[in-house]
Length: 333
Image (cartoon, rainbow, N blue to C red; front, side):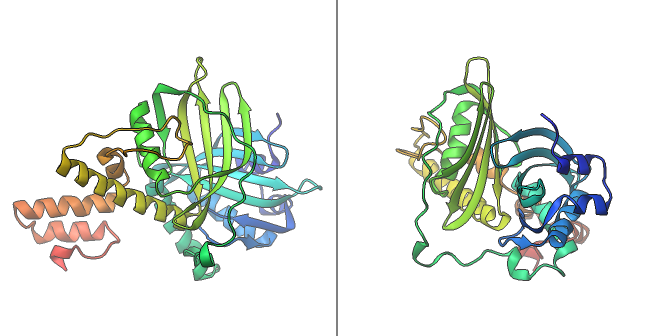
């Protein structure tokens, strides 16, 4: 399969003029960082070029297609950490790009990327584009579920999850089911819009909601020689809605931990497949929610712990303040 011209342009560091020719005049981008689409070839190019610069160097890891769109999976860098993403391209009848959609992971690194993009583009993109839009009135139009779906596929005992919210991977079937099941208590049921399947690779594109806020997601699943899913990578957009999902899931995990500690109960799972809706008792997920904490949140937690042992000196306080953007610590306000 030949490479998409967009990928070739990024890999060859094409000139602005050559890159501009790839886009239709009425091109539109649904950027990960924004909650509203941006229209016009020049505006789309402005966002894409800044993203390529801030996340570069970009390395493409996989390219697949269905009948209407191309999926470009890639890795980049943000703040010195690895950023993973998928760019979805829809071409018009003339072969020009008329639609771009970008999904990324994981949330802590995406936050660094989003902040860098905001600094670069906030003067040219309206402020409300960066924020959650109002929820649809009365729940909005009910989601129409497509007829396409895969039958349940067995999960490998050593299944590994690369979550859109967690900084580190989750390993083994029970832990993965716990992490996905917890998120599914907040995330709505999914309507699948595209499925690409081979004997060793599955790509599922879907629409869903997080507490009523629309999201688009993608599951990239790899199968082992036994036909079991052995690796699952999940991408979501837009960032503000993903943040809602992340925060609600984190809070739920914390409450579940407290409940289990108080009752002495042990976690149990009844999810035959991560795609299925949650049923029955839910797991405690202390490991999962702690992985959702950003470095800044961990700094806060560590600071509180040190304060119990004895208030740190002024130099430590100043250093920690300079490394966070959350404002002064409550004990030092």
